[in-house]
Length: 322
Length: 181
Image (cartoon, rainbow over all chains, first blue to last red; front, side, top):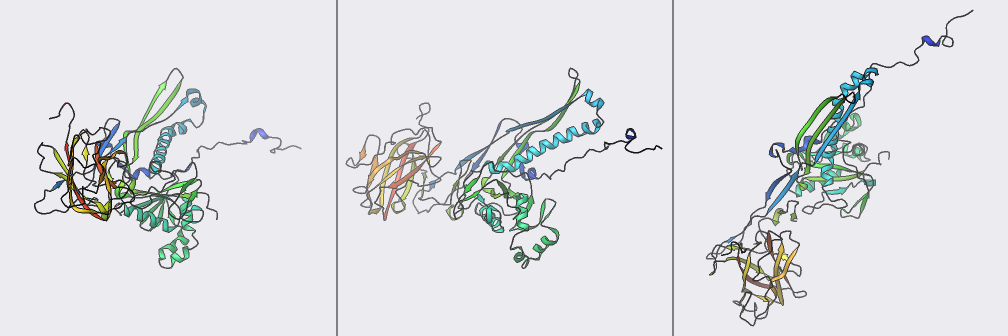
C-alpha cells in the first residue's frame, strides 16, 4: 500500500517561496534643514561669501564750548563657504537585470534611495554644524551665560532646569525669544518622560498628566513646551567621539558618549546654508561594461552664523534603563 | 559682559552699551600742521595694572604716523606714581606696544598740578626735563592690524585715587610713501 506524503513526494512541495514584495527599512523624519537660514540666492557663484558686520555707536558727555568727539563703529566680517560636494552612485549589470526576479523594484529604488542617503548626510551635517563650531570642553560663555554645558541630571542626563538655563543663555545674548526650538535625542525624551518627580509637575500643570496617557512625544514632536521650547526628537544629533568635561560653575562634569542636543530660536536661526547645486540625478548606459549607471550629486555649505543664538546641552546616551 | 565674536566684532550687552571706559574721539579741528587729533579724557582712578582699552569706538588706523602726544592735567593725580599708554591690535589682545605712547609717564611734574602740560614728539619733549616718551611717537603704524586701540595702565602697586588727563594724540593718516603729503 502506498500514498503521498512529504516524506516520499518532496518534489511537489515548494519548500521556499519568494514574496513579490521587498521589505524596506523605516525612515526617520528629517527636520534639520527646516531651521537653516538658506541664502542660496545671495551666493550664486564663487567660493566665499563675505557678510560684513557692524557694531554700535556710543554716547559721550558734552560741555559747552568743547569740540564734539567723533568716533567709529566697530566692524567685523563673517565668511561663509560652500564646503560640501557629495555623491551617491550605483550601477546594475545587464546579466543581473535579466536574471533577477526583483529587478524592476530594485531599479525603481535606486534614485529615491540615493536621494535619501544624500538627504540624511545633509541632515547629519545640519545637526553637527553647531556643535562642530563650538569649542569642546568649554562652556562657550557669551555675556556670562553658558552656551555649551552638560546635562545637570544624574549621570549627565537632562532635567527641566537645563531648558531654563538654555533659555537664560539665549536671553542674555539678545536672541529673539520666539519660536524657541529644542531638538533632543530620544534618550532625552525618555528621561523627561520618566522623571521621578513628574507627578509633582502634573499637579500644577495638568497637561503633564497626558504623558502618562499618551506619552510625551507624538511623531517627532513633544506634546507640550518645556520652558518655552517646542521640543522635537531626532536621532541625527551629533554624537561625541570622546568624553567631554565642562565646568559649568559647580565642579567639573564629564559626559561619556555624549550627544549634542540643540536649543535655539527658529526666529533667528543660528545656522546659515546655501545649496550651490541641488541634488541632481544622472544616469547613462555603459556599453563597454554592459551596465546602467546612476549618480546623484549635490553641493552645499553650512555654518554656524550666530554662535550666540545656539545652546548645546551634552547628555549621556547610556542612561535609559535606570 | 562684552564678547568678541567670530566676525571680529566686539559685541556689548545691556548696561555695557553706549559708553567706553573713557570719553574719546577725533575732534573736527585739525592742528597747525593739518594733522588729525585724537583726544581722550583719562580718569586715572579707573586705570588698573593690567592694560585696558580706553575706548571701544576710537582707534588709530594702520599707516598713520603719530606726530605727537600731549598731556594736559585737568585734575591732579593722587597716590600713584606713573602710567603707561600704548596701542593694541584690533583683536584687542595682541600688543603693539603698551608703553609706545607714554612710557612710565610720571606724576611728578606732569600731572601733580592742574594745568601741567607736556608735549612729546619724536625729537623733543616740552618741557625738555620731563620723561615718558613712547617709542611709537614718530613712527608709522604697521599694517599687521587695520586699527589699533589705545590702552593705559598704572605702575604696579601704585593705584591712583584721583586725577584726570586730557591726552591729545596727533596723527597723520595714510602716511605711506606714495600718498604722503
